[in-house]
Image (tube, rainbow, N blue to C red; front, top):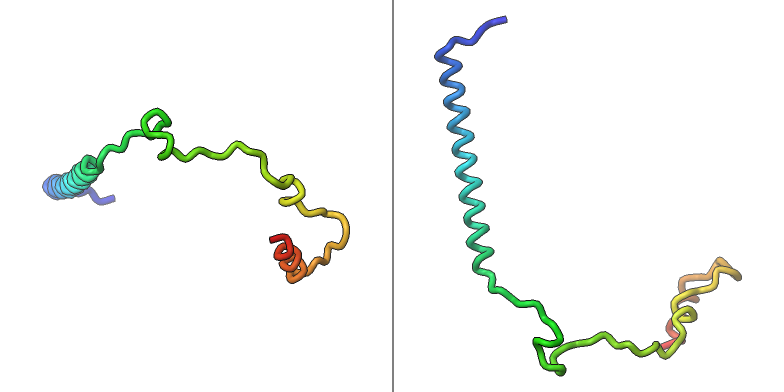
Length: 96
C-alpha cells in the first residue's frame, strides 16, 4: 500500500475545499434568487363570503339533482356481458 506524500495530500484537500466552497456559493446565489422571485409575487388574501359582495361569490348548489344518481351513473352487471362499444355509445346518445 502506497502512502500519499504530505504536500500532495494538503494540495488535494485544498482543491476539494475550493470546489465545495464554489458549489456552496452557487447554491446560496440560487436560494437568494428564488427568495427574491417569491417576494415579487403579490399577496392575495383568502376569499371569504364576508370579504366580497354576494354577487361575486360562487356557491355550490345544494338542490337535489333532477334524476336519481344511481340510475344515471351505474350500469347493471347482470345480463349480456358482450355489450359492444357502438351499443354503449348509442344508448348514451339516446339519453341526451
